[in-house]
Length: 533
Image (cartoon, rainbow, N blue to C red; front, side, top):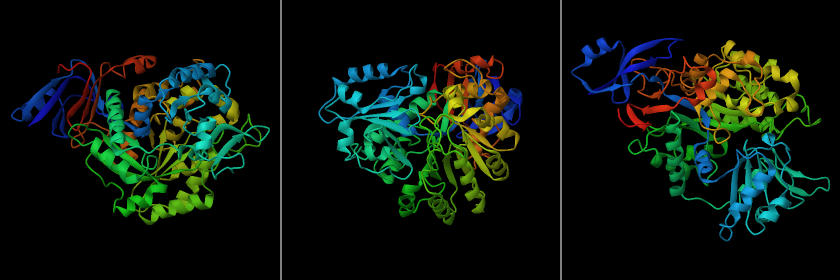
């Protein structure tokens, strides 16, 4: 028995403008697409439900190709600082929270961003000490490549004035060589190691909260990287398995495996594609550099607003190549965080020296700043790039100060990449940016900054079709599932995102305002705005 979906604008995404009248599904698969009359007469004996879309728009299910599901769930639970507009607002928010803290309880805030403040200062630990002297405080920057800690947290973590910077990290110090409370990239781990351990039940709850939010945004699946941050690979992996059980909760989670827990995966005889129908293991996640906001993205030339600073290599080139070679010895692709052009170039050179022979695809996560050499390699290698269109809304205009005009010609260069046959997949990097594929699609089309409302480098803007493509077929392609997901074709997964309005007909600046009417995963409605179908 099956379902016949009809009565709306149904876009297959096989090519621009391709639409059908109806889709017939059985269980988790699309059986046929075509005219309502043909499908009805062909399958009328098997049709159990007819779902009239009432003029709404059906797309293949939207995929977020790079996010952190657990961190997104925690952001929903924790103190959200992402919308605050000044250091004083942050401090006032902290003051309001301190009254309810119990003894030794951590005060954790998420998402502060000094670049959206009128006075982009970095809050000093002494200011945090004044607000909260008797509890540890940790405030994670929006990029998650930097955090602020108070003296209590620093002392609890046994970080001393003479503690050296770790490889790939910086303990920021003032002119007197005293710790300011600002920790960049791997130096964050010095503070995070003192966080209390969390239970599997807690992780399961957080995943469930995150997935509920994701499906309400029209997202049917996400490629997440969480497995090395919560105490053990096994505990976190099992939390995903139990939370997304396919009965109470459906969501297609593709989990990247951080290289530091790769051996833990091998010890359990697990590998690429293993898991369940809804939770599967994927590529080896590696960090090559940091982020632009904290000036730790690894650049070929120094930062325009910080002469002499080229950013940070999280791993030495020798160690980076060792990790990639280890992945190759098990036939595994890699998914490498590379924001700066030097990071991207070095990663791609290593991938070129050690190609995969089994057809699985490597991924460059972000690919935010390129140079000509990196772009040439990208155009020749079977590497997908996970891009974050919303970054252009939040990084400008301050990115110009960091990089200068010349480097920006190959920064956030989505159209250039696609014109050179580089496969791109759309994502949010949540909790860095808000989970909202529609906001991401609009950002890819308009390239309008939130801070000043200006449009930056419109020559790199995508068409609406291209932008929808990266969130459907693009996300499937990145994980070798383009023959089963990301389009409305016979035999493909019955994953749909149903919109209240036609995304291809509305004005581009209205795209993010379109409501999600329904999210469908494997033929089952997992979110419905108005449950009356």
